[in-house]
Length: 198
Figure 1 (cartoon, rainbow, N blue to C red):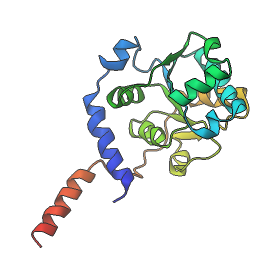
Figure 2 (cartoon, rainbow, N blue to C red):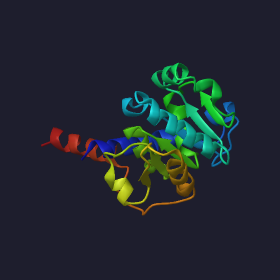
Figure 3 (cartoon, one colour):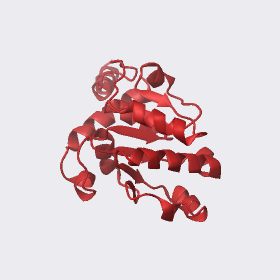
């Protein structure tokens, strides 16, 4: 049993606790399936002004046709402020403060698209069967790219990244189960019980 199996259990459990009403969706006045969710925090993107500028331009281009919610990591906010980009963001690019775990699960689960440089968010998007675009040169989770749930969009050219974002909307990958069947907790409990009585 792998860590991914347990992560899938957790995602299913908390995903069931977050419906399409209330929470972050209500506070941010978002309709399920009517927005993209973005997260950007990795040093490879935030410490390189050119890469961050490409991400901002690409997300802004997407926001022209689909609202983008961007819970902003403190490091990313600081760099955007230092580069003078924060004040120039378009209104459709909804920059918000970081959100709690259940709010994040709700935002992931009901997004039309997830754009991220986070390893964990890539997997969580798949758990909720939401298409994902990874804003990096590579990903740890190549199985999700191979299955069509995730695609790479290295932030070198804003138009190319924006095209990848637009192309991912409404897509679905193959129905694969690389992280178990959502029964890791049951199997762990059964194994512990068997060991206890052995």
